[in-house]
Length: 293
Ligand SMILES: Cc1cc2nc3c(=O)[nH]c(=O)nc-3n(C[C@H](O)[C@H](O)[C@H](O)COP(=O)(O)OP(=O)(O)OC[C@H]3O[C@@H](n4cnc5c(N)ncnc54)[C@H](O)[C@@H]3O)c2cc1C
Image (cartoon, rainbow, N blue to C red; front, side, top):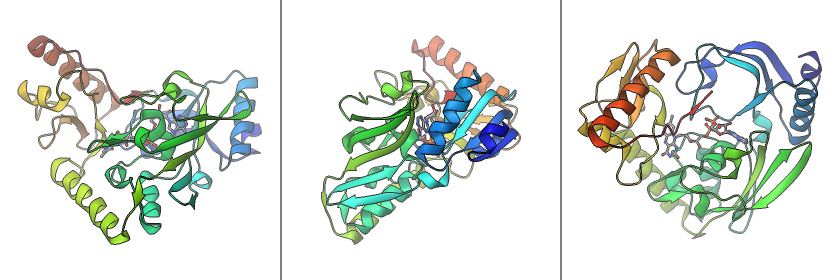
């Protein structure tokens, strides 16, 4: 802990609830917030030498941290990773930049192609790892390359080698790799006002269809092969089902929400009820999209 604190901001026994959009989760033994790739590499080196496992956290909008917390370290991508630079249609972005900020930068530069992604509340790092997407567009549609830290060195892969597919990428299977930067290429130059209007339109659609007034991690389950998880959950009559403070949203059956005071155990128990009911009534096993830690 002392060695890490000499490199970057770090705290012991940090509650994880404030760092996740579900607002649940117990403390992480070590919480480190490196601000650049050199600090990040050093923190990883210290953790590896001490045999301490680590987990990378972006904006915490797709994770469910259990009530017992995290034995080991959470590496939170710090504000120093929120940079961007532009060259033509190409935008280089730090892993900590939010997709909203990426879309704003694209709009300022009259670069179209990021509008659909603008309302996803994650960071570039989390969005690449999850191949986040909305309204028919995914990160894979605009990604050119990804740079990450692994085994103490910086490596870059092009988008093809990063193998982005539905809510997945090679990074899902590379536990030690931490994304530090991504390069994107927009589709075309557009008028700034048109881009802003398009972003606003998508965000309006989100506000109308999603329970954004409650804590959640967005869609709890991945889309099954045929159809939508939310439709199956709705058809099983599960809207409004509650366990403690966790509830299947009445507004969008795909969202498990924390109505306030939910524990991770409540959310996990409700997820189990949803999975068992949908399997029994529809013959489909829903796979969590949310990363459970
Ligand atoms: C209201 C709401 C709406 C949402 N809508 C959508 C949507 O429309 N489409 C969609 O796809 N998702 C959606 N999500 C889910 C979420 O925003 C995305 O999955 C997002 O990409 C997660 O980014 P994050 O920075 O929050 O990642 P986190 O939740 O912090 O982490 C998610 C995963 O990525 C890993 N990770 C994070 N940063 C890095 C990094 N730098 N290097 C390596 N691994 C990393 C973590 O270890 C974890 O496994 C929504 C969530 C909410 C709360």
